[in-house]
Length: 107
Length: 107
DNA sequence: TATTATAATCGTAATATTGCAATATTAAAT
DNA sequence: ATTTAATATTGCAATATTACGATTATAATA
Image (cartoon, rainbow over all chains, first blue to last red; front, top):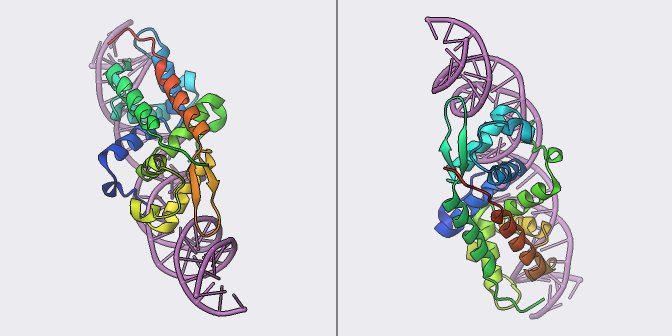
């Protein structure tokens, strides 16, 4: 009990849910927007920018990484990463095509 | 602790996160897709369609209702509801415009 | 009115998420 | 080799989510 029954759903539905989950927290939305608005790679100050503790930001970043939305260098002293444009566009299309299926004529 | 620090984020980020959260579970994605593909209103069999227990489906439906994605009649014997087209389009644009902000030239 | 079919609510167990303090890594600079 | 600045990891507490059995509410029908 308590666990999502992933196996009873289609891969498509699971993938969309997984992608949505990444954006299901305001911190991650803020992080994504901040990074995507940068000119180049990001190399610090996300912590002050967002206002959560460093370990918390690190965790959120990891969630974003796991779905493939970031690329660059992650370990060591200075971060240097940015949005993975291919994945970003992929998700945009994924969401958009999901929202496009309505055959509705009631209510 | 344990609670999302909603107050430190912008309304926009909180709203997008809230919308994403609804789609952050495969059951809700499946429910939304099923309903949106129906010709008219839905009047039963979501439980067999999805494969979760009736209280669980009811809970998920409630989450979807809470963001305003459903309209129609909810109480009583037979359900009769469908996608709230205005809200649906609103979310589509919301996601789409979020994904549209990239000023990226690195990596 | 009693029955029946359908959906909501309650209660609860299992698991996941969020957040941070403390600590450990990492790699550059001294 | 030390120090230093930046990020990752660990461990844990608080809260949220997921799921379902049992029960209750609802409204149509016999």
